[in-house]
Figure 1 (cartoon, rainbow, N blue to C red):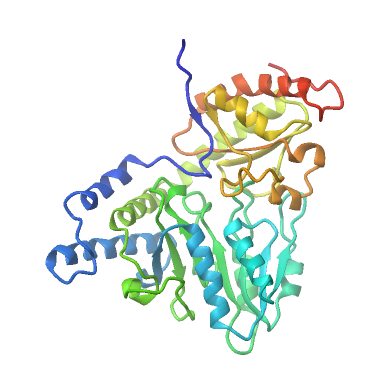
Figure 2: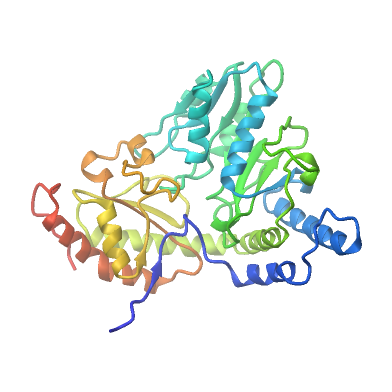
Length: 399
C-alpha cells in the first residue's frame, strides 16, 4: 500500500514548532531549570533570560518590556483584558465588540450580559467589514472597553484597528478613557503589529499560532492603564499574573517573535501568492464555490471557501482520508454542529454556509501542497454533490 502524503492546511488552529524555537527552549528544559523567582544565582540566571525574552517580545509589537505580561494562551489574555476593564470602571456597564469575535471574547461578553451589562455586537457586511459609523455611534460615557479583533480567525479579514484606535483616543469620557483591546492572536507574525500606532491599551497574543509551543501567550497592557489581575496568588509578573513563569516556552515565544519580525514581508508575500493560487485553482475546478471576504484586506495565509449544497464536515472527512488536514472554522468551536457565527454574520447563503472549509497556510507549506489538494478536492466535491440530499441539481466539478 502506497504511503499517503500528508498536507497540513490548518495553521490558524496551530502551527508546527520551528526548529529554531525548539533550540531556544531546550536549555530551559534541561540544565537551566531553576525557578526565576528564586534569589540564588541558579534562579537569577533564568530570570535574566526571561527578561531578555520579554524585551524581544515587546520589541515585536513596539511595546515596552514592562508592558508585557506572560499568560498561558490567547484566551487567558482576552478574558483578563475584559474583566480587568470592567473592574477598573465599575460604574460603566457597556462593552463594545463585534459579532465575529473569537469565543474567548464573545462568551465573556455573553456572561456579562447575564450580569446586567449591555453589549453592543457590531455587525459586519457580506465581506466581513465593520461599519465605522455604527461603532462611533455606539461609544458612550458608559462604555468601559472596546474589544475588536485585529484579524478574523476564520476568514482572515483584517479590521481597521488603527482607525478604531484614533476614534477611541479622540473620544472624551469623564472618569477615564475608554479602554481599547484587540485580540491579535491570528495577526502577529503575518501582518505588522504596532501598539503605539494603533493607540491600543491591551493586546492578546498566543505562541502556538506563530510556530512557538502551545500553552504560552502574552498580554500587552499599556503603561498607566488601570489593571486588575485575573489570577491571584504569588508575586510573579509584578503581581499582575500569579504562577511560576513557563520559562522554556517564553524563550520559544521570544524566538518565534524574532523570526517573524525578520521575515515578515517576505513571508507575507510568499503566503499571499500561495493562497491566491489555491483560491484560483478551487474556483476554476469547483463550480458553486465562494471565497468569503475575497474583496477586502485579509491575512495572507487564510482562505475561507464555501461550497454550495454540501456538508463541510463531509468534505473534511474525505480530505482527512487522503492525508489533507483543514478545518470548518475555529478549532475552539468545532464539533458544535452549528454553522459558523462568523459566516452567519456575513450573510453567507444558507445553501453554502454548511459547506464551508478554512484553509490556512504557513511558511512550511509550498506549491506541492496546493497541487496535492487540487488533485483530491474536485473529486471530493463532485462525489458529495452527487449524493447530497442538499443538492438541487447536477453540480459537477472538473477534475
